[in-house]
Length: 389
Image (cartoon, rainbow, N blue to C red; front, top):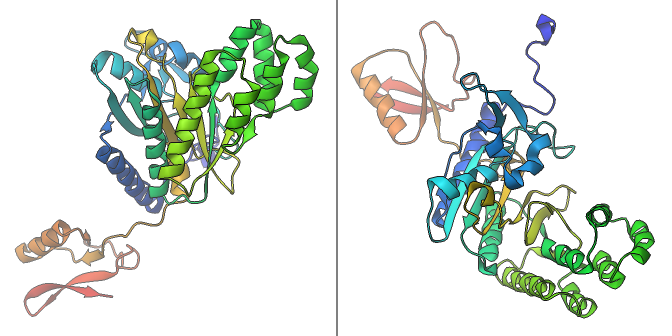
């Protein structure tokens, strides 16, 4: 048992959000959700926990080690506290909102991770994101990417670097080469760690070794795509299609967001067992950890009985807060204690106009400075007036 002096401590990676930061966080949350709304993305609020088989069904199995498990005291069934909201949105799209056309959703809510996803990360991030269901074309990916970049701009993030990849390239090459599950897994691990010496050792054992050698070297600016077309000229047609998709995405983003630096890495396999096509991550110059990420995951609804194409992105609102400018705060006014009708009317009118009015409590003794107030409400000539301090 913890000693009484330690009962206030929180678990590692879990933090309180105190008033000043909470006000900034809520201001940013509202700003970003309003941005999503004008793009046509509808807000959803999935529950904090669900039955475990729902949270971890299909693509959600990758989240197993990240998910806290609890027992439902009503049913005795195992439940999970969500570690990612995307599988929940897939369930909503499949069962609660079975629309026949493209559907756009957004969300913002706390998730809980058994371990932080990076050294700097919280175990209780506030995940904010947007998802587009029901469209297979690259136009949907471009829309999601543009919205993500606008979200980062609205958060105050500057000097952005966007990294693009496409997991179908490696997947189709591995399939065409007939790689065993073990060899594919080993090669995947090598690419993830960018271990070129290990790749060179493995290449002699691989069919079509020139494909996999090229894949390990194809990273850089948009010109890499021209090189890829030549080096992978005899690859399956789906590889060519993936390269064409990357070229279309890059061209669209260069037109709409020329200030964003683009790079491509064709051996980037982030979320390989989860994503099915384009993958992307946004970075800032002072951090090696992505500030937002996403991609295409066309099979996510399959386990819920409705496999719809889908693409989306997410970010941690707490991380974005570090880049957001402080919002303009309304005037804070200290009003005297009392229930005089004219005083109550003056307080009500000030609040209706957007001012923060804190009414003193008898005997409390808090000053205007203690409460962060820059003005007081004082009676002058029979009228209640705001007096700036």
